[in-house]
Amino acid sequence: MKGTFFRNGAIIIEIAKFGVEEWLNKWEKEARFDISQSSVAALTLRELTALGGTTTAAFFEKLNSRKMDYGWIEGSPAFKNLVAELYQNVTAENILQTNGSTGANMLVLYALLHPGDHVVAPFPTYQQLYDIPRSLGAHVDFIHLEEDANWQLDVDRLAAIVTPKTKMICLNNANNPTGTLLERTALEQVVAVARAVDAYVVVDEVYSPLAGSSDFVSIADIYEKGIATNSLSKTYSLPGLRIGWVASPNDEIINLFRKYRDYTLISSGVLDNELAVLALSNREKILQRNREIVSENLEIVKHWIEKEPRVELVLPNYVPTSFIKLTIPEDDYSFCASLLKDTGVLLVPGSAFGVPQHARLGYCCNKEILKQGLSLLTRYLRKFDI
Image (tube, rainbow, N blue to C red; front, side, top):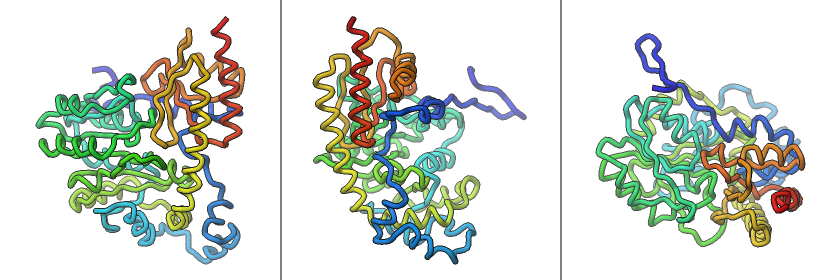
């Protein structure tokens, strides 16, 4: 088996390179017009503390006597209570703080999956949700999302792939990179499929929608074996805090995570926890800011798409990631590399998600950066018209 070897009698599976992270690690610091990211424009520390009615200096002055010990291992009571308010059926006791949503996903997958387990995931999706399972020895089957079907999950296909041996269904809602949403009715259908075979449903909900009339619901609120992961990175514009969480209504599942969490995290740190509490205490102010950014910037993208013959887009559902289709006579990876070199504009090639001739467009950056980036991208695409 490719990528598989043995050590002391145990099967070790070599993990694949993480396409999107490898690309960004290499190129993002060279960008002058970064329209690749999947967060809403990050808040500054000054902006965050101002939301709480104080200055950065005054905020940290209050923390001067705080010991830099491990702090609250699972997150402070204030943090857990504030996160629990985001759910209908999850108590504060069943919230575990993690190192971002990537840490939350890793904890869940590490705790629940074993060699030989069967996992079902959509494709494309966030690579961690299928390559971590494969690295743990699980067998992963994909439900391929079709662009012609607006990248929507086909629940009938899901039902056809799931078997009595299926251990877990892994989803990303809204989807990264496409930005499309699995609404409540469809998610309830997923739950029915999972319940029939007693499978877990894990949903990375870091892209919960910011606007629109979409009927979003957390998996943790509708399924007894539902596990939601989330963070402050995307919807809350604070990727630098590296604070996320796991939520589930199931006490047994959360207690299992506690055991594995002790091996992987211990705590997220005193300062990050306090800043997370500040952000969550002022979440409506952050969400209002971000609704405006998403709505206004999406209009810019819509107008650009209407006038750009070499680009198509299934519109994202008011989340900060989108996935454009490129009609160009060269491969997307080479195109994105030369685009950056020649113009300073950064996209993530679709090949990083396993979908060639596409690119992730992160449109929720600074508005002027977006406008300039799209203008330069248009000019660069015109070279193919000659």
